[in-house]
Length: 185
Image (cartoon, rainbow, N blue to C red; front, side, top):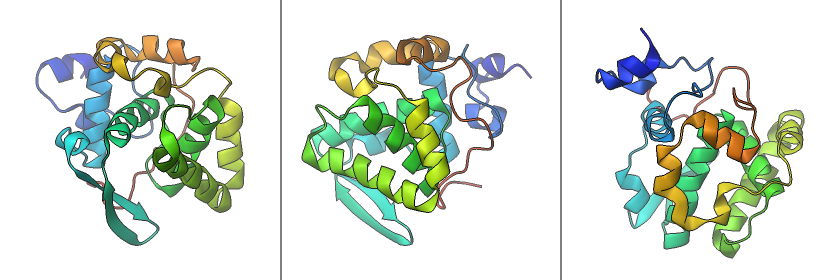
């Protein structure tokens, strides 16, 4: 079944996209975000929750979901969509290194420290993969630069988003996306 037609027919995007393939460039960013959320067991409601779930290795806890944190999570999720990095600990390290190289201006100390910590933990666990993610990034700005564009970004195609970010049309990460331990199987 064609993935885009399957989504239009009401089939969930996560059931149509194998974890071995990047999100198709023809999908809208909204479709890709929804597939990413479903694949990981995340919800739109979590963006607006007063606290959000976090984990560090085997420890699970909640952290304050400040307005900057809420917005940063939305942009961070779109970075996952564009690049294809997974949500396991190493995947989060990769995306964090990719984001850090592009700059963390506007995130503040709280959210910026989360990104830096993710990159450092990822580097300790998989230094080659996280260093490769750093190199795959560039000095171009991330989506963290403009908090007002979220709805505009959702209306783009994934290909347009990747072009804006200077990412290859098929993403950055190639392989099987590994998911966090609490993701649906």
